[in-house]
Length: 303
Ligand code: AMP
Image 1 (cartoon, rainbow, N blue to C red):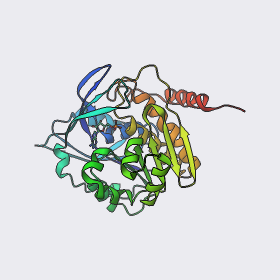
Image 2: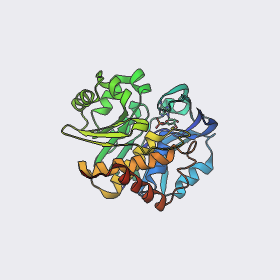
Image 3: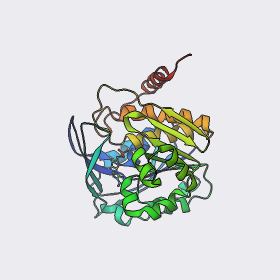
Image 4: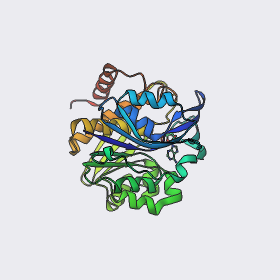
């Protein structure tokens, strides 16, 4: 099964109560691809960087089987840069800088070899690019779109056009409220289903994630961790684990998606344990299996 990933490949500057990581590797597509690479081998990355982006990082992802044919390198351009600062409550963060740089005029033309992709993970990026990618894919099985308040603030109409075309939307609770104009997440979901998606995943940071369809709801808690060093990329890592698991099993039923939400949550629980991709690059199958078991133990009870 093939998974197409689209999103930023970035430099981040991150401040958390645990420290300050300057000019580290980030980007939605980077986190998605690393997380998904633990599930499937046919991953097709679509993004753009400047010549300042380290070649070794590209080589590391390629070594995990991620196709880099869709990564455009602009020789005289600068890579997307994001700086953020987290509060004591790490569910809250302030964006200090977003420099789009090479992203400003990225017009992704998918390589021929990508056009038969079945599972599509549209990571957080301008809705224009997300739409442009969907237009080039004739036969998809599942399209998932992730976005954030930044795009709601500056491109809401275009974002709604993108949302109308996808099967699953993943956003956090505040973004669900902003998008729908409803405070109750149940009412927010009702409004969002009217916009097009058949499923909605609402990410609630340290409080887990909720999978919704018009008639069903599933809730997966986050793993309680003693130390969260850097929540950056948790949402994207969740998306990568979710999509990687779905692409591996091919099961797009609600029951299949429930399992994928647990896998996504398990991968996100690793991501936040170190800054940047520190933890995500070191996992083994045994680490993942053990963590899944902790989710099972955390949520099973008998009455
Ligand atoms: P997350 O913590 O899951 O929201 O993702 C954080 C990652 O998203 C960081 O590594 C940033 O490089 C990237 N990012 C931050 N802002 C944006 C934006 N406006 N568009 C696309 N990617 C972004």
